[in-house]
Image 1 (cartoon, rainbow, N blue to C red):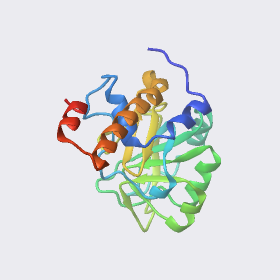
Image 2 (image 1 turned 60 degrees about the vertical axis):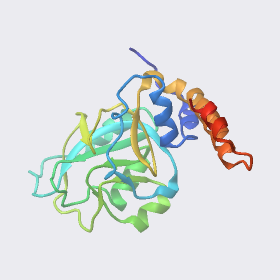
Image 3 (image 1 turned 180 degrees about the vertical axis):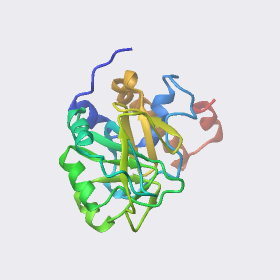
Length: 224
């Protein structure tokens, strides 16, 4: 199914909802199993206070456990980011198991922020937290590390797997303090309306539960 990219206004609308609400909204369309579409819990927000991150993925793979051949330039990667729809999210799979060096730090965060990235998603490590946090650059990572070791980029543009979630360049990323998920783009424009219906239903249930006149029978009527 061919879809057009969301407008800046449509993307901003998605930022109004947390990942839990968006996940619930996605379920109503029955486009994928309820166990799919999100990264496992080890991929966590390092700066949860930054709120929701929304953007289109640009993917790459890196490693740090041994020196590279010294001939790999990141210029092609930068060009790929610049050519991607904005806002962008740099998604880098660390091929080391376990990871030993962080691709992400103060310098890379500034570079990628200048290239229009809202943040990064990686199963590897991040560092320079004090310097990066004030930038408003989101870190979603598997760990925090001291060193970059021998880190180098292996390739870019191929599908990657982060916390069990396959992500492709162009996928629509939605993430917050709860974790990272991919919104199927064919239903992305319908998510806000679905989310509002879910919120309204939940408010009715919560209002009843917090009411001094709470009745079990009334709850059963709301949730058959």
